[in-house]
Image (cartoon, rainbow, N blue to C red):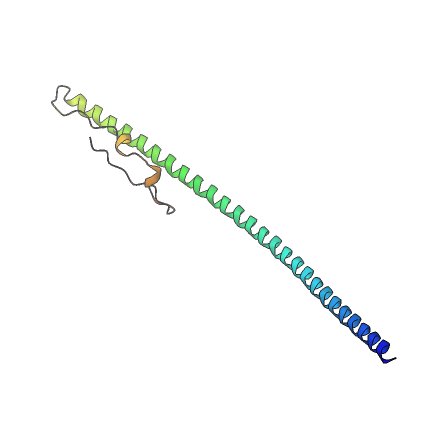
Amino acid sequence: MTAPLEAELHQESSMALSNSMQDDALERLAEAEKLVVELKDIIRQKDVQLQQKDEALQEERKAADNKIKKIKLHAKAKLTSLNKHLEEMKAQGGAASPTSTEPQPAEPLSKVWELDRDSMSSEPGALPQPSAVVG
């Protein structure tokens, strides 16, 4: 009788051990699922933050592009004004001595003072630097 009793005790202990292992596995599974949910929430939050930063950067870029356009337009107007003034001065000087032996007129200011996108400073309010044309 001791042999069946031992077998029964052995079976009960192995069932208890099996139940304990199943409980541990279920607890670990529940903890892992909880962590997955937390990670998904963190990922959603980070996605929202990235989207907000992206929108802010796009707005900053638009503002910078508009500022560059405004500066270029202002520089173009200034060049036009200076060229007009130069032509007026040439006309006044040419009327006084039409047969003068002066050298040929210099290139228009717009060719001498070319605005180059690469020469524009990235600092706000900075004006482009002229690039001299050697002729």
